[in-house]
Structures are given as structure tokens and as C-alpha cells.
Length: 149
Length: 59
Image 1 (tube, one colour):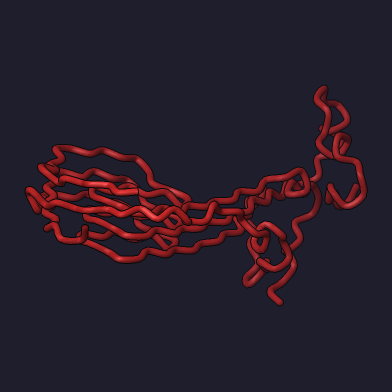
Image 2 (image 1 turned 90 degrees about the vertical axis):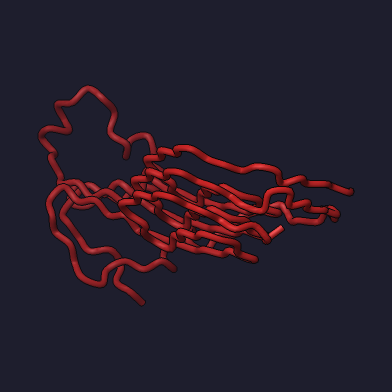
């Protein structure tokens, strides 16, 4: 392992973002971490420096990952020690992702994303509608945050 | 366990991908171990109806 030459003729990549990596060749260890608070508002109002990751448990809850315990004895025979790629056409690589031409020993990547939507209070429209609003289903205290109702 | 790998020819013609996202990997080659984790949250309380208030400010 980790003894082949990577040859890439052509790569077209538009976006690599949020802790992503493009790698030609070999790596011993790859670790990436990315977290995001995705806020969508009905009107384009954004306040600078708002939001805190420690406020939401999704950013701190433990992720159970099966441990690597099995001991495997691997023998690599490099009959043709070359990795050839003619063409790669990729639009986007994002959020702790890895694009690699080559070999890696260990990979660990983690992403945590929380979406929040803020919608204006259209009370009159809500009373006339036929579907049940979310707050009636989740009416227990502390689950739904409804302002100005 | 004993595992024998014979790397003969590895030649890729064309790969076309739209997106690799949220702890994903696209690899042309070998890997020994992969551990990928991704959490995504859009619960009911994430829908806030009312005046636009800023989220709790940075601590």
C-alpha cells in the first residue's frame, strides 16, 4: 500500500468547500470536521455574529462509531504501480468530503448540520388553511417556538 | 486474517459526479479503514413563525 503513482490527465472541479480535500497521491491519515447552522429567512435579513453552536445539542451529541478492532494482515503486491485517470468531471465537493486519486490508510470525517427556518406570521392565512400547522402537532412545551401569536 | 491484494491495472476513463457532500468520499485507489459520520437536524422547533429575531448571539 501507499506505493503507487497517481496520474490524472484532466480534472474539472467547480467548488471545494467546508473542510473538503482534493488529493492526488497517498495519505496516511485523513481527518475532517465541519459544522453548519443553516438559517433561511423569508426576508433577507441577517444579523452579524448571531448563532452559537453550543446552544444546539446536535453539535455536541456523541456519534456512535463502530471501533476498528479486527486485526487484518494485508499484503500488497504492486504488479502495475500506477493509478491512471483520464478524466474527472465534478461539480462540487463539500462538507468534510474527500476526493482522492491514490491510497489512504485511515479516513475519519464528521459533519453536523442544523437547519433553521424563520417565516413571517401570516395569521389570517393560517386560519383559512386546510392543513394542520406544525405547532398543533408538536404542542408540548418547549418544542415549538412561535412568536407573536 | 490474512488478506492478499494484487494491484494489477487501475485505469479510469471518465468519472462524472455532481456532488460529493457531508462526510462522503470518492476515491480511486485503496483504503484500509473508513469512518464517516454525518448528522442533520431539521426538527419542528427549527421552524420559527413570527418576527425575525436573531439567533442566540455567540457566547
